[in-house]
Image (cartoon, rainbow, N blue to C red; front, side, top):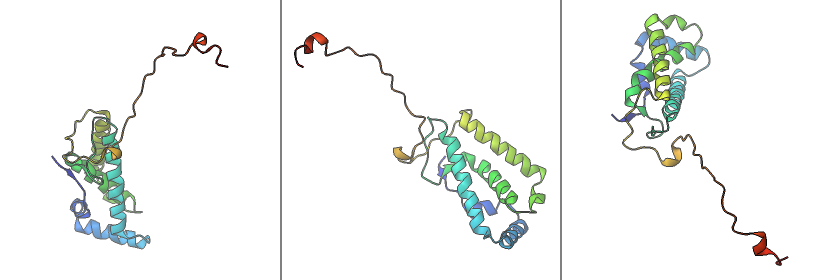
Amino acid sequence: MPWITPTLSQCQQRITGAEWQALHRAATQAGQDGEEMAQDIIDHIVTRIRGRVAARPENLLGPEGSIPDELTTCFLALWVYDFITRLPGMSKLLDDRRLEAWRSAESELRHVAEGKIKLVQPVNPAGADLQASAGTVEVVSATQRRVTREGVSGLF
């Protein structure tokens, strides 16, 4: 499966039109722009997901701003939770189903980071310089001395 770049329209389909309007109005009343705030949350969650994916050295990251297609449901559950909880007085929109979806998404991301869930690698991975790395360790062993006291005696 390909990696995808989540969009605001995908997120809006996850909530009702009335909820979007209520959240948009609440954001405006708080001096924020609803769409800008929604996009900020998208960017934040994409970064979180990419970080969890990169926690496993065998995982390659797709193009910047993209997530594995198989984590779309996880992304959307996190977006709904973060969007609703970011605005005062909107927590009543978090019903048991949405809270369970959020918990499940958090658990799924933990499993991805632990390597319990294997992901399809991207067709076009990001450049090697953008890949997260666990680092490498170089083992250095003792070397033989090339220069000895006897060999350099008389040089000083």
